Length: 344
Image (cartoon, rainbow, N blue to C red):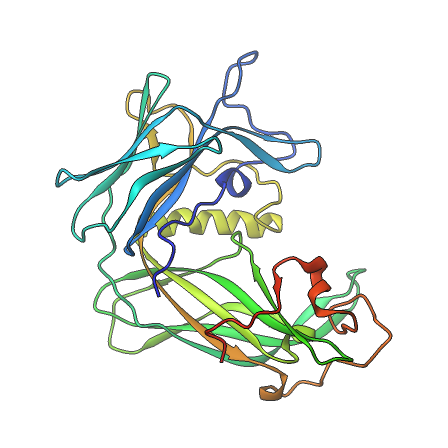
Protein backbone atom coordinates (compact mmCIF):
# COMPACT_ATOMS: atom_id res chain seq x y z
CA UNK A 1 0.00 0.00 0.00
CA UNK A 2 1.37 3.41 -0.93
CA UNK A 3 1.31 6.11 1.70
CA UNK A 4 0.28 9.66 1.14
CA UNK A 5 3.30 11.43 -0.21
CA UNK A 6 3.01 14.34 2.12
CA UNK A 7 2.49 14.84 5.80
CA UNK A 8 2.15 18.56 6.59
CA UNK A 9 1.61 19.90 10.05
CA UNK A 10 1.17 23.52 11.01
CA UNK A 11 4.52 23.91 12.67
CA UNK A 12 3.55 27.06 14.50
CA UNK A 13 1.54 24.74 16.77
CA UNK A 14 4.65 22.71 17.43
CA UNK A 15 7.43 25.23 17.41
CA UNK A 16 6.19 28.66 18.36
CA UNK A 17 4.39 29.99 21.34
CA UNK A 18 4.98 31.18 24.86
CA UNK A 19 3.07 33.07 27.54
CA UNK A 20 4.25 36.26 25.88
CA UNK A 21 5.13 35.54 22.22
CA UNK A 22 8.69 36.38 21.26
CA UNK A 23 8.77 39.31 18.83
CA UNK A 24 11.50 39.06 16.17
CA UNK A 25 10.68 42.42 14.58
CA UNK A 26 11.41 45.99 15.71
CA UNK A 27 8.75 47.56 17.90
CA UNK A 28 5.88 49.04 15.89
CA UNK A 29 6.41 46.86 12.81
CA UNK A 30 4.07 44.04 11.75
CA UNK A 31 5.32 40.57 12.47
CA UNK A 32 5.55 38.49 9.29
CA UNK A 33 7.56 35.40 10.19
CA UNK A 34 7.38 32.81 7.42
CA UNK A 35 6.60 29.22 8.44
CA UNK A 36 7.37 26.41 6.01
CA UNK A 37 6.26 22.87 6.80
CA UNK A 38 6.20 19.70 4.77
CA UNK A 39 7.88 16.45 3.92
CA UNK A 40 8.16 14.18 0.90
CA UNK A 41 8.51 10.42 0.98
CA UNK A 42 9.99 7.96 -1.48
CA UNK A 43 6.45 6.94 -2.48
CA UNK A 44 4.80 8.18 -5.65
CA UNK A 45 2.41 11.05 -5.00
CA UNK A 46 1.78 14.77 -5.17
CA UNK A 47 4.53 17.08 -3.91
CA UNK A 48 3.10 19.49 -1.36
CA UNK A 49 4.13 22.02 1.25
CA UNK A 50 2.34 24.44 3.55
CA UNK A 51 3.26 28.12 3.91
CA UNK A 52 1.91 30.28 6.72
CA UNK A 53 2.96 33.52 8.42
CA UNK A 54 2.34 35.76 11.40
CA UNK A 55 2.48 33.17 14.20
CA UNK A 56 0.67 34.33 17.31
CA UNK A 57 -1.25 33.25 20.39
CA UNK A 58 -5.00 33.86 20.27
CA UNK A 59 -7.36 34.73 23.12
CA UNK A 60 -7.82 31.04 23.94
CA UNK A 61 -4.08 30.59 24.38
CA UNK A 62 -3.72 28.59 21.15
CA UNK A 63 -1.16 29.14 18.41
CA UNK A 64 -2.44 30.21 15.02
CA UNK A 65 -1.12 31.73 11.79
CA UNK A 66 -2.28 33.02 8.40
CA UNK A 67 -1.91 31.31 5.00
CA UNK A 68 0.74 32.64 2.64
CA UNK A 69 -0.77 33.44 -0.77
CA UNK A 70 0.83 34.32 -4.09
CA UNK A 71 4.21 32.66 -3.56
CA UNK A 72 6.14 30.96 -6.37
CA UNK A 73 7.12 27.53 -5.04
CA UNK A 74 9.06 24.71 -6.66
CA UNK A 75 11.11 21.64 -5.79
CA UNK A 76 14.46 21.60 -7.57
CA UNK A 77 16.87 18.69 -7.99
CA UNK A 78 20.58 18.98 -8.71
CA UNK A 79 20.04 16.81 -11.81
CA UNK A 80 17.83 19.43 -13.44
CA UNK A 81 14.49 18.14 -12.15
CA UNK A 82 12.06 20.91 -11.23
CA UNK A 83 8.45 20.66 -10.09
CA UNK A 84 6.19 23.70 -9.81
CA UNK A 85 3.77 23.78 -6.86
CA UNK A 86 0.47 25.65 -7.23
CA UNK A 87 -1.01 27.41 -4.19
CA UNK A 88 -4.57 27.52 -2.85
CA UNK A 89 -6.38 29.80 -0.41
CA UNK A 90 -5.18 27.75 2.56
CA UNK A 91 -1.48 28.28 1.86
CA UNK A 92 -1.02 24.74 0.61
CA UNK A 93 1.14 24.39 -2.51
CA UNK A 94 0.73 21.24 -4.59
CA UNK A 95 2.31 19.84 -7.76
CA UNK A 96 0.06 19.43 -10.82
CA UNK A 97 0.91 15.73 -11.17
CA UNK A 98 2.13 12.87 -9.04
CA UNK A 99 5.88 12.27 -8.98
CA UNK A 100 8.41 9.95 -7.40
CA UNK A 101 11.76 11.32 -6.27
CA UNK A 102 15.02 9.92 -7.61
CA UNK A 103 17.43 8.24 -5.20
CA UNK A 104 20.85 9.91 -5.08
CA UNK A 105 19.53 13.31 -6.23
CA UNK A 106 19.73 16.34 -3.92
CA UNK A 107 16.50 18.32 -3.71
CA UNK A 108 15.72 21.73 -2.28
CA UNK A 109 12.51 23.67 -1.81
CA UNK A 110 12.56 27.11 -3.48
CA UNK A 111 10.14 29.88 -2.47
CA UNK A 112 9.87 33.33 -4.03
CA UNK A 113 7.72 35.71 -2.03
CA UNK A 114 7.46 39.51 -2.00
CA UNK A 115 10.81 39.97 -3.72
CA UNK A 116 12.59 37.52 -1.42
CA UNK A 117 13.97 34.07 -2.21
CA UNK A 118 13.94 31.28 0.35
CA UNK A 119 15.53 27.85 0.01
CA UNK A 120 15.76 24.73 2.10
CA UNK A 121 19.10 23.06 2.71
CA UNK A 122 19.53 20.47 -0.10
CA UNK A 123 19.08 16.85 0.93
CA UNK A 124 18.71 13.39 -0.51
CA UNK A 125 16.44 10.49 0.31
CA UNK A 126 18.07 8.45 3.10
CA UNK A 127 19.80 5.32 1.85
CA UNK A 128 18.69 3.15 4.76
CA UNK A 129 15.82 0.75 4.12
CA UNK A 130 14.82 -0.96 7.37
CA UNK A 131 12.67 -4.03 7.98
CA UNK A 132 11.02 -3.08 11.26
CA UNK A 133 8.93 -5.48 13.35
CA UNK A 134 6.29 -4.49 15.91
CA UNK A 135 5.65 -6.25 19.21
CA UNK A 136 3.43 -5.69 22.25
CA UNK A 137 3.70 -6.54 25.94
CA UNK A 138 1.46 -5.95 28.96
CA UNK A 139 2.85 -3.32 31.28
CA UNK A 140 1.99 -1.40 34.44
CA UNK A 141 2.81 2.30 34.80
CA UNK A 142 2.75 4.61 37.77
CA UNK A 143 0.52 7.65 37.52
CA UNK A 144 -0.50 10.27 40.07
CA UNK A 145 -4.17 10.78 40.83
CA UNK A 146 -5.99 14.00 39.93
CA UNK A 147 -4.72 15.64 43.13
CA UNK A 148 -1.18 14.59 42.44
CA UNK A 149 -0.89 12.94 45.83
CA UNK A 150 -1.27 9.17 45.31
CA UNK A 151 0.56 7.01 42.82
CA UNK A 152 -1.76 4.65 40.96
CA UNK A 153 -0.95 1.49 39.03
CA UNK A 154 -2.20 1.78 35.45
CA UNK A 155 -2.42 -1.37 33.34
CA UNK A 156 -1.77 -1.07 29.64
CA UNK A 157 -0.02 -2.29 26.53
CA UNK A 158 3.47 -1.24 25.51
CA UNK A 159 4.01 -1.32 21.75
CA UNK A 160 7.62 -1.48 20.55
CA UNK A 161 9.32 -1.08 17.20
CA UNK A 162 12.20 -3.50 16.71
CA UNK A 163 14.61 -2.16 14.11
CA UNK A 164 17.66 -3.89 12.64
CA UNK A 165 21.21 -2.84 13.44
CA UNK A 166 22.91 -2.02 10.15
CA UNK A 167 26.44 -1.27 8.97
CA UNK A 168 25.67 2.44 9.06
CA UNK A 169 23.99 4.81 11.50
CA UNK A 170 20.23 5.17 10.99
CA UNK A 171 17.57 7.59 12.22
CA UNK A 172 13.85 6.86 12.63
CA UNK A 173 10.64 8.75 13.33
CA UNK A 174 7.25 7.13 14.00
CA UNK A 175 3.72 8.44 14.31
CA UNK A 176 0.78 6.18 14.92
CA UNK A 177 -2.77 5.69 13.74
CA UNK A 178 -4.92 4.00 16.39
CA UNK A 179 -8.06 1.99 15.66
CA UNK A 180 -10.39 0.11 17.98
CA UNK A 181 -13.83 -1.50 18.08
CA UNK A 182 -16.70 -0.34 20.31
CA UNK A 183 -19.43 -2.92 20.90
CA UNK A 184 -22.89 -1.93 22.11
CA UNK A 185 -23.75 -3.58 25.43
CA UNK A 186 -27.32 -4.52 24.49
CA UNK A 187 -27.39 -5.13 20.73
CA UNK A 188 -23.81 -6.29 20.14
CA UNK A 189 -23.52 -3.90 17.18
CA UNK A 190 -19.97 -2.79 16.50
CA UNK A 191 -18.35 0.44 15.39
CA UNK A 192 -14.79 1.14 14.29
CA UNK A 193 -13.12 4.18 15.79
CA UNK A 194 -9.93 5.83 14.53
CA UNK A 195 -7.61 8.26 16.26
CA UNK A 196 -4.54 10.12 15.03
CA UNK A 197 -2.52 12.73 16.92
CA UNK A 198 0.15 14.20 14.62
CA UNK A 199 1.84 16.02 17.50
CA UNK A 200 2.80 12.69 19.09
CA UNK A 201 5.81 10.96 17.61
CA UNK A 202 8.74 8.78 18.58
CA UNK A 203 12.39 9.00 17.55
CA UNK A 204 15.30 6.60 17.53
CA UNK A 205 18.98 6.82 16.62
CA UNK A 206 20.67 3.47 15.95
CA UNK A 207 24.45 3.24 15.70
CA UNK A 208 26.16 0.94 13.22
CA UNK A 209 27.14 -2.42 14.62
CA UNK A 210 26.87 -6.17 14.46
CA UNK A 211 23.65 -7.68 13.09
CA UNK A 212 20.81 -7.67 15.60
CA UNK A 213 17.83 -5.58 16.60
CA UNK A 214 17.18 -2.57 18.81
CA UNK A 215 13.81 -2.13 20.48
CA UNK A 216 12.14 1.18 21.35
CA UNK A 217 8.71 1.99 22.75
CA UNK A 218 6.45 3.88 20.35
CA UNK A 219 3.13 3.74 22.24
CA UNK A 220 1.45 2.89 25.52
CA UNK A 221 -2.29 2.18 25.49
CA UNK A 222 -4.09 2.09 28.83
CA UNK A 223 -6.41 -0.80 29.58
CA UNK A 224 -10.02 0.17 29.03
CA UNK A 225 -12.97 -0.07 26.71
CA UNK A 226 -10.71 0.40 23.68
CA UNK A 227 -9.03 -2.94 24.34
CA UNK A 228 -12.17 -4.93 25.07
CA UNK A 229 -13.00 -6.20 21.55
CA UNK A 230 -9.97 -5.49 19.36
CA UNK A 231 -7.35 -2.79 18.93
CA UNK A 232 -5.11 -2.05 15.95
CA UNK A 233 -2.09 0.21 15.94
CA UNK A 234 -0.57 1.30 12.63
CA UNK A 235 2.98 2.55 13.03
CA UNK A 236 4.02 4.85 10.20
CA UNK A 237 7.80 4.78 10.01
CA UNK A 238 10.00 7.44 8.48
CA UNK A 239 13.69 6.83 7.89
CA UNK A 240 15.17 10.32 8.10
CA UNK A 241 18.59 11.95 7.97
CA UNK A 242 20.61 13.21 10.92
CA UNK A 243 19.65 16.86 10.40
CA UNK A 244 15.93 16.05 10.52
CA UNK A 245 16.41 13.76 13.51
CA UNK A 246 18.15 16.53 15.46
CA UNK A 247 15.42 19.00 14.57
CA UNK A 248 12.60 16.75 15.83
CA UNK A 249 14.67 15.71 18.85
CA UNK A 250 14.79 19.36 19.91
CA UNK A 251 11.06 19.75 19.27
CA UNK A 252 10.28 16.66 21.33
CA UNK A 253 12.66 17.61 24.11
CA UNK A 254 11.17 21.07 24.37
CA UNK A 255 7.57 19.83 24.27
CA UNK A 256 8.17 17.22 26.96
CA UNK A 257 9.72 19.87 29.12
CA UNK A 258 6.53 21.94 28.92
CA UNK A 259 3.91 19.16 28.85
CA UNK A 260 2.63 18.66 25.31
CA UNK A 261 3.50 19.95 21.88
CA UNK A 262 0.65 22.44 22.14
CA UNK A 263 1.80 23.93 25.42
CA UNK A 264 3.79 27.16 25.41
CA UNK A 265 7.50 26.77 24.69
CA UNK A 266 10.28 29.17 25.61
CA UNK A 267 11.41 29.89 22.06
CA UNK A 268 10.93 28.75 18.46
CA UNK A 269 13.19 26.09 17.00
CA UNK A 270 14.71 27.09 13.69
CA UNK A 271 14.68 24.55 10.88
CA UNK A 272 16.43 24.29 7.52
CA UNK A 273 14.75 27.12 5.57
CA UNK A 274 16.60 30.40 5.01
CA UNK A 275 16.45 33.68 3.11
CA UNK A 276 19.28 33.42 0.57
CA UNK A 277 19.98 37.17 0.81
CA UNK A 278 19.42 37.69 4.53
CA UNK A 279 20.48 34.83 6.77
CA UNK A 280 19.44 36.85 9.83
CA UNK A 281 15.75 36.65 8.91
CA UNK A 282 13.91 34.20 11.14
CA UNK A 283 12.15 31.43 9.20
CA UNK A 284 10.34 28.67 11.08
CA UNK A 285 9.60 25.11 10.08
CA UNK A 286 11.42 22.23 8.47
CA UNK A 287 11.26 20.56 5.06
CA UNK A 288 12.63 17.04 4.71
CA UNK A 289 12.73 13.84 2.68
CA UNK A 290 12.18 10.37 4.12
CA UNK A 291 11.66 6.72 3.28
CA UNK A 292 8.26 5.47 4.32
CA UNK A 293 6.94 2.13 5.50
CA UNK A 294 4.26 1.01 7.91
CA UNK A 295 3.16 -2.01 9.88
CA UNK A 296 0.09 -2.89 11.96
CA UNK A 297 -0.28 -4.91 15.11
CA UNK A 298 -3.48 -6.15 16.78
CA UNK A 299 -4.28 -7.02 20.41
CA UNK A 300 -7.20 -7.08 22.86
CA UNK A 301 -8.03 -8.04 26.44
CA UNK A 302 -8.36 -11.74 25.62
CA UNK A 303 -4.66 -11.76 24.73
CA UNK A 304 -3.61 -9.84 27.83
CA UNK A 305 -3.64 -10.59 31.57
CA UNK A 306 -6.10 -7.77 32.23
CA UNK A 307 -9.39 -7.69 34.10
CA UNK A 308 -12.32 -7.00 31.73
CA UNK A 309 -13.50 -3.41 32.04
CA UNK A 310 -17.18 -3.58 31.12
CA UNK A 311 -19.48 -3.62 34.15
CA UNK A 312 -22.86 -3.20 32.45
CA UNK A 313 -25.47 -0.45 32.28
CA UNK A 314 -26.68 2.16 32.96
CA UNK A 315 -24.38 4.21 30.78
CA UNK A 316 -21.43 5.83 32.52
CA UNK A 317 -19.63 8.61 30.61
CA UNK A 318 -16.11 7.26 30.83
CA UNK A 319 -13.75 5.16 28.76
CA UNK A 320 -14.34 2.00 30.78
CA UNK A 321 -17.98 1.52 29.89
CA UNK A 322 -20.21 2.26 26.92
CA UNK A 323 -23.90 1.39 26.90
CA UNK A 324 -25.15 3.81 24.27
CA UNK A 325 -25.20 3.45 20.49
CA UNK A 326 -21.64 2.87 19.32
CA UNK A 327 -22.04 5.37 16.47
CA UNK A 328 -22.31 8.12 19.11
CA UNK A 329 -19.02 7.22 20.78
CA UNK A 330 -16.78 10.31 21.02
CA UNK A 331 -19.61 12.39 19.61
CA UNK A 332 -19.55 10.34 16.42
CA UNK A 333 -16.18 11.78 15.40
CA UNK A 334 -14.05 9.33 13.38
CA UNK A 335 -16.57 6.56 14.00
CA UNK A 336 -17.74 4.16 11.26
CA UNK A 337 -19.89 1.03 11.20
CA UNK A 338 -18.01 -0.24 8.14
CA UNK A 339 -15.31 -2.78 8.90
CA UNK A 340 -11.93 -1.85 7.31
CA UNK A 341 -10.82 -4.34 4.67
CA UNK A 342 -7.50 -4.86 6.39
CA UNK A 343 -8.88 -5.70 9.84
CA UNK A 344 -7.90 -9.18 11.00
